[in-house]
Length: 219
Image 1 (cartoon, rainbow, N blue to C red):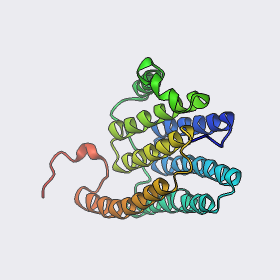
Image 2 (cartoon, rainbow, N blue to C red; image 1 turned 30 degrees about the vertical axis):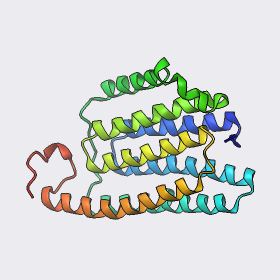
Image 3 (cartoon, rainbow, N blue to C red; image 1 turned 60 degrees about the vertical axis):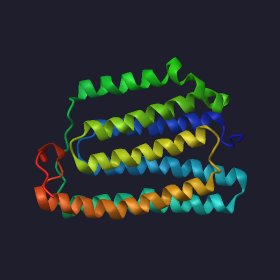
């Protein structure tokens, strides 16, 4: 499908999302991490609004409103309430220090620009740079899940991965996949419900969301 978003705008938007995901690695305060995720989601909303305005699609406008309501408003509010409820305003930590984390991010970015992923550029040759930066954002989001000790940070990593996947879909010219996007929104709604129970149970059991202390799990 032909992409309706100009390559320059698409690349800049994906680049902002990429750096915001990196910022999740650098940021230590839980509250700040939530706001960084909201900023990522706002960029996804911008891309959807742009696509809706170009295509004159009411369905895409509705989808953009749903994405804004869920990703930019509902999910961050959920996390902020959990932070307040579970007194998680403290700093979060990583297994790797900041220098090694930045090295890991650089390596993952270089890998995505290697010949192993070159074939993906054929999906949308005009948006090759946006495609590669979106793939890098996916890997860096997975790195958040692996590297961060806090369960809340890992959840943000999962949602950042979803944002990176959506950014990749835009770069590949799939932004009009309404059914796919609605499916993703339903998954996030279900995930928020599950995460509420998950966070509450973990905190009641361990009085912390630092997964590094959860060495002995009992049924």
